[in-house]
Image (cartoon, rainbow, N blue to C red; front, side, top):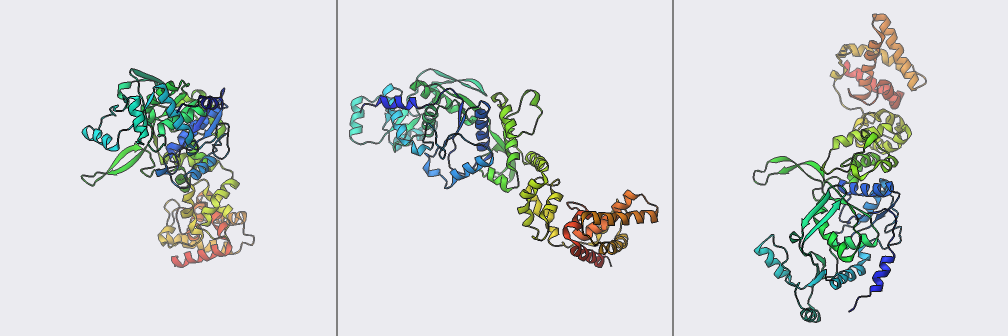
Length: 516
């Protein structure tokens, strides 16, 4: 059957021109791991820096590996990270649809167009024959058995209903392509296999659908992992076969992670460095959020995994999204793999936490505080105590759980070498503090502070000691009694303020009982 060339012309007429157009094209086969997120970020930043269009396309032709709700996860992640797209499945656009399974009518037509151009052919080889080829030589490429079938032979097989795939016909010679990161790369076409473009069930392969959709959507810059460098010559040959303009390739080196692996022979565990992947269960964006990391910190850190700013911004570490858009340059993308490191992410996260306003931090921290502390205690006051002391939000519950219940502790905590305190001397101070605290009428930070500070002044005068040293001496026993811990967020005054007068007095009396 003759092809409808007018249809191809109409498809060409739909393609937008005159602007930078990038796409993030995830497969809904699981969560968004760090490598996926970085690709999305770079794709977004290239488009926004050039004031172009950023497109979301869902590549779901691999239905066997499709994970339920994966598309929702992808959209949630992009929204949380500020990656707003101009065109996509739920917003539409001039080259809709944006889901590959909704574009199935396109791929067979373009595969047949390649056959017409002499750049592809039908392959009727059985699965058994192909398996035998690889059994004889595991590294063997397809032997082009069907390339030289006559038209009569092809027609007979089609009439008999024999299943077939459509393969790309790799020409002789060499293929050179340019990558914005790795430069010019040349390969010998003899090393390339006649890849399958359309499977026997009519579904396109990833490589073929990718090229067709990129062209029809007017994609000018293709961002992907460096593992796709080896496939790029085949992509180029497809573009050339159709007579299409080749987009700018931006291949990004892998994100690596330190991991442990069990030696199958010895059973011993050993340290290795490997590429991050879904298959190994490496943390996704949502995992990192559950671990207490802020979206802003994750975005900032992940962007710097393989990219660095140039010029006057070369030493800058912290960027807002508008600053990243302004600064992002493909020239800053590294050829070398980057290392994902939780300690470094902790550094970024802690910095972002500390930069939050007290009000904003309190809102973020409240669920974590409430998971450990009863509702009658002021979450805002507790949030103020921990904001400068945590790396991640998930550290909060264990840090503040003493507010809910006084932990068991021994009298040895009342000893403090720096302040020259023993359990005996702490007891004497705590007795004075109890009387002073019981007399406080207005339970406020200032009232508690002034009461304890006044006691320190009195004791310093009596003992002829320096006031600053006596303040430390006074604060230690009441903090131990109130918290039951030697390391706490906040000092004695803050802790007492949160606990309230009655609970503070109750805990002080427990402390004195332990010291008796």
